[in-house]
Length: 218
Image 1: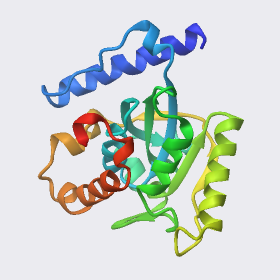
Image 2: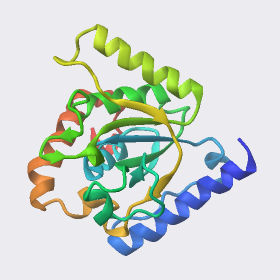
Image 3: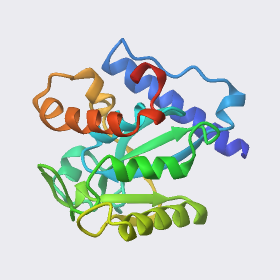
Image 4: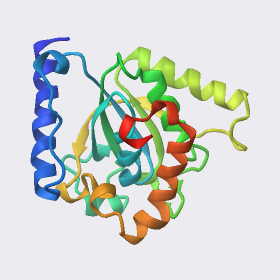
């Protein structure tokens, strides 16, 4: 991994420390050495509300950090008001920072498909619009091949009643969402949307992927 890549990962962790300290004093930045940081990689997914996605991936063993944000559009420096209005082409997305020696990209893609409905076009539950589309933003040809293979296998095995419509597209840019969106699921456990939509989704994921969970969530 290049020095630029390592610097980028440390920048991500620094940004994480800043936003979590603003949101809730119970959260702290991951403690990580330079050696450990050099082994980390990133993945980008969209599958509806980023509050739900962030909570799902934060529970995966080998994942060091998850950030909510926007990806898939051309608008520079998008904000939540613009994205939620559907005028940017961006999707609500997450950036997953993970150790490939603990959890590989294939597992992350399997978790992605298993934790939402990838057959509904521009919709997840009550959330409707292209900003809530199902998408995998691949950063390499290897990631692209893995995503296509898993999608094809799921379709051929008839795992879902309807065909998968997940967009598999090259990653271009990820924009961090506003501070108040970060760790939203953990900070606002009694918020109505979290209780009625996010929590059932996260709990279903935890039952289906018990072997992928961090110890504190088992």
